[in-house]
Length: 212
Image (cartoon, rainbow, N blue to C red; front, side, top):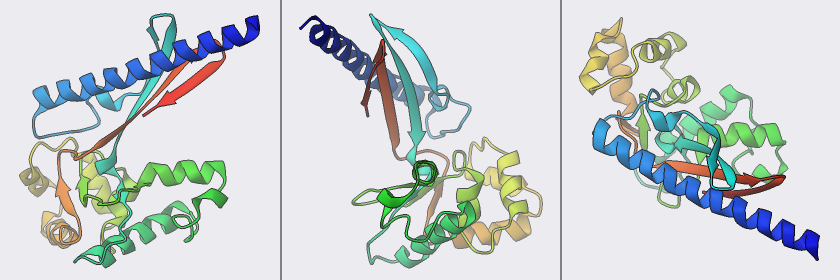
């Protein structure tokens, strides 16, 4: 009975820490909105994972992911859906994931599932926005078949971008510009993010509780 009481107490404290972590994330993102306005980038405080933050008698790890730096799976038939699906397929090939990864993620290895969640998320009505300030190189490279590693590296080297016009300062803009304009047909290229995913892991002793 004493052991059960202790386990229940540890779970309660870990769960409270996780819940507080989500409130903490909401505060970080609201503060970022108030201060940063129309730009989101990876130099901002929300982009740094936080580990072991003490909350009461427990502690919390917090990871905030910018979903606008990932592809949203698209099962619609609206204009651009075919091109967006092709972008996701290019990304799967680049990362070495099997073509069936989206349909049957349960048969992937733990490492493969972690890779998948780094690049793709599932929404019933997915936004088609890609934040050029936060998307990793693999996502940018998969946006359009004509985009090259050189082009993507030029974008990364100039981040954070504060307005889309800043792209015109990129080397070989006369080549890059038309490619990005072609990319913006299936995707909306932005410098701010449409949605975030916060995952808070509360812990007390050996007990872990995750909220998102």
